[in-house]
Length: 196
Image (cartoon, rainbow, N blue to C red):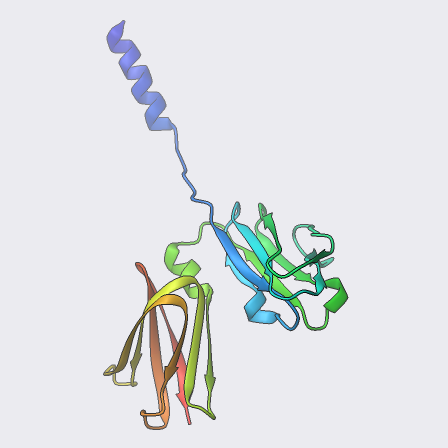
């Protein structure tokens, strides 16, 4: 009898799949002229996005008619105010601030089972200012290190960041195409930058 019970318990354990998903909260600033990439993030089902008001104007967070999920924060006013929403369905969720829809909009993309590397890669944003020769890199996940390589793979610069934002002066480099590798924890991604 004891042997039969042990076999039954073992069979139940082997036939049971346990999935543990660590839900994550992503923070987005929300204020006048925050839009596009700065107001967009790629997440997994069950993750939460929290918007923080960065000015004293009255704003809301409202899904568009094409969004996978329907949400509406109602009008909120006050710098430092927050509103959050937990996304549960895979899909694309465009949203706006209805009083300022031409200058405040973004997209929350919900994708199934992203690896840590995919989450990091999809949420690293960069821009190169050709006038000042400064590269700006930001991420919702902390960036540990940025490395700049020429097209032969030779390291040109390396910066230890440990923050969600970095600005690198590339003025010492000659004009050309460079690869920038961003690392955050165990994740990494690369992107191409043209310096004129």
